[in-house]
Length: 90
Image 1 (tube, rainbow, N blue to C red):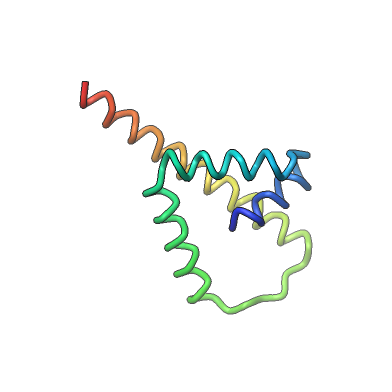
Image 2 (tube, one colour):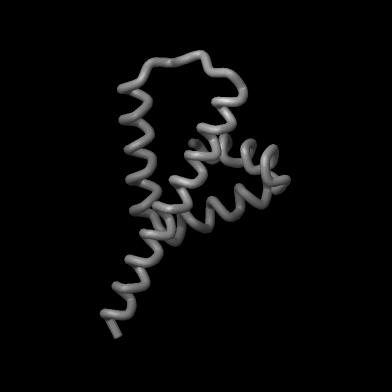
């Protein structure tokens, strides 16, 4: 899910203003560049390996939710790893 897709999905499903999502996304990119680089690469690999499909709006919404959950899980794991590394440095 791109930043724009995430903004649209959160606006539609969680009533979060797109400007808020955009701001948070940018800050997360600053804090965890490696995660977002890996995420972009994974999205590119996925898009090149799958053909475009015609989905119903219900399955599209479900896919968007799954992608948001996946982003959050990956970000939480990266954040935990980063905190562990910071603790090791002390």
